[in-house]
Length: 115
Ligand SMILES: [Zn+2]
Ligand SMILES: [Zn+2]
Image (cartoon, rainbow, N blue to C red; front, top):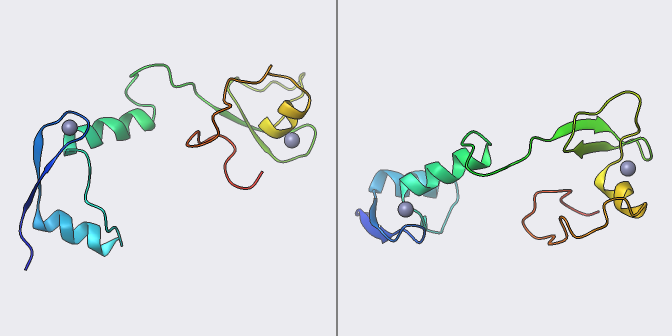
């Protein structure tokens, strides 16, 4: 028997309601964990991830074709026809960026899966 649960937001520390309806929604999507943030913080996170909030300097990324390997390259500047564009992989191989800027790896959303 499902009941509403009161959870504490780990972002702002406030209690919020995890309603039966939300629990069913989560279950229907195969999610087993309870949400760790209140709806407000979730909405704030989501909008900042979509770059809509202006909440601090997320750069716009442009898509181009890598001049070296031909794969999709995502670059933080507008690609222009007169300059070669490289994917992050090739760029690093050439020692371009001086490293370090996105060295963390985990959770960067840059590059991604197996390369
Ligand atoms: Zn919150
Ligand atoms: Zn490349």
